[in-house]
Image 1 (cartoon, rainbow, N blue to C red):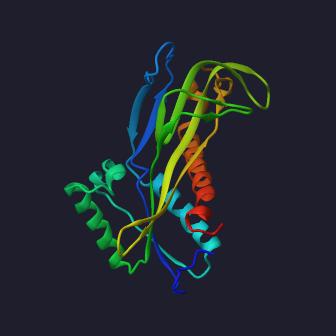
Image 2 (image 1 turned 60 degrees about the horizontal axis):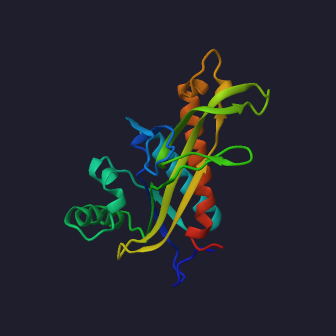
Length: 237
């Protein structure tokens, strides 16, 4: 499964570009309009905890799917690489320069392939128990907040107004390290919803989880999304 066509063992370099910012999307009613009217904010992260989570998830999947493969983790502090990640493979000067810099990183590690993890933008479809809710577009990793939809806790059945929805909207690409051509790519989305009834002493969705719990649940969403995408990405099924 997932072996190189010529029988040689693959060396996968893994690079994540999803962990520079957390997206915070506040739901707004869009009655009578197709335009995304949600409030969109971002929180800049100073560490690599979410990128590291993504890299570990890919590494674990490769080891499970291709026992002959070797993996190496890459990291970049170049803000342009994060900002232009959705244009990285477009034929324009800035993108070509960034892609060449990534290629040099791969050559330095003798990599045969690159697994690149980037942000995916799509319709907000947040997973409730028996349906999906959400409006507008969301991208990358973050939280969607709805302060109005009647909800209840799944354990105590206490009722609340609204929910907090951690999400990971991710694209995973398999790239030939020699040509920098995309061999295969998969979009993978993961989300969950937590009723505002879980926010002890508060009516705000943002207070459903502590800061540490927010990071932990985003790590869980990232790992689930990537793990689900990897067999298809490596051609293992």
